Length: 391
Image 1 (spheres, helix red, strand yellow):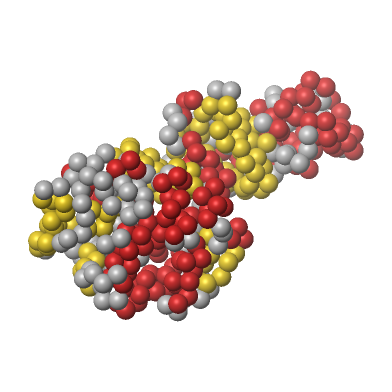
Image 2 (cartoon, helix red, strand yellow; image 1 turned 90 degrees about the vertical axis):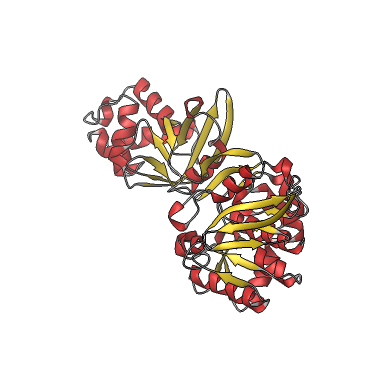
């Protein structure tokens, strides 16, 4: 998008790509379908930005999601909008997004150099003067860095842009994985593979609730994943994990009184059955032993033998099953990188460095990140477009 925008603005543009093909990371987005933006208003969009919302405000108003959609449709890509305003190609093929971007670039005269790795950036007297690659030396008046973060390193995102930024005197906010699963100290092994729908996941730091939302959690061999967990990870990824307490409300539709009534009714109806069987009416099979153990209720106990105190403990656990986070999963599984270029050193109107004239930063290189739903790709497209247009 940066190359297209710069060339459309009348510049001679070379796009240097170290991979054997363009847009390699796009192929893995949206499970291979590419959720390329979110069809919402700029205000709604910015409410889904976790960090850097103020910096991005101008960019998102100048190049909103609808502009991204218009761009792709004008170059022949049919789009569709799914739940949560997520935008996908009608074909469900991420490769069609890459092909459309390539077609747009060729249309405005962008020259592609594949299989070429940039080694360093040259500056002279406070301005960009060129780059050195493994195949040659180039002079240039302007350089846009669009290298992505360090998540999914197999696609070529190996932190090159951060290195170039540091080497040219810029400050980098330490990078952490975002939109990623959470390793637990107490994995729910018996529930592995269970998908918990319409539950509320909360994260507390001391007495403050830093995250609380309803959605879906997937129980894994290492801990938890799924849409709700990815969103939570984006909020807590810069807090020491030992300061975070996680809990899951397994029955958010019922308050404690209603839940007590439900348990009494179930116990009365199935009074001679064992608890491991009775609780199947309330919970997925894999979770029954987890809840009973946490509440210190024997799975072999008959329903009519459950005491009032045991019932109270069951209600407490059903409303707040405690999970102990150990760490986030790594960059190789993270959807995006959180951290990057210190925003104080970048002009939000142009994406140009405030330290080096003619040097521009875009997308994941910047210390901005958002939740899932097409927001992070839209940030990449908007910042790329603005950087190109500014030259």
